[in-house]
Image 1: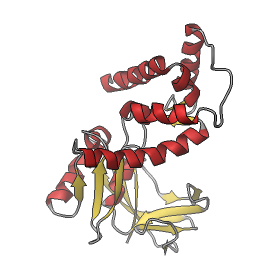
Image 2: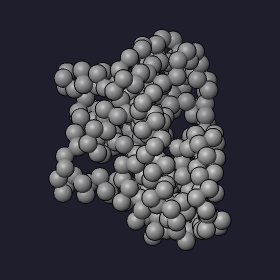
Image 3: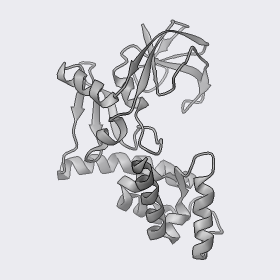
Image 4: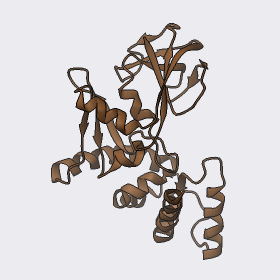
Length: 244
């Protein structure tokens, strides 16, 4: 059986779509447990990918996840729901991506069943108790923090090169992000942010809030020239989301 995990309700057929691998595929898993992480998201809708966790499988092929900061699983999984869709075999192929649990199909794929998960964190903790899932909880040690820093540095480099940074990274790894921005500001530099008045700066934030990404990304120039104001804007967004 093949499975696809999504926070979207009511799927009956999956269309091949171009994702990070550059080819139109439907993605599926043979073991749906690890896919539960994919459906997690923070209160602003940021997906629970490598901004928050590192995930994979153990040498015994058991799904595992690493927290990258204290309480991250609570933030992105607690009270978040998802759907486990059972799929027909539309020609799924293994070993087409760098991640071994992932299978892909170039064809439209019908949904043949669905299971609703009301709380992803509860489901993962249940699997953990059954020794079907391994959770590495965040530890405030030098070794673990260096492990996290290496992961975030690799991720941040991609964002800084594009010029757009996901605000979840700023929220949780502010010092690392600021250092990366300072070191890469000359790359893909966008002019026009250097001397904004406070009114102009607030207008920029307002436009970001109302674009198609709802302010989930920020230009690195804003962090470079207006770090305090930009962090304040991000914190207010999360505070407002937590009150809803």
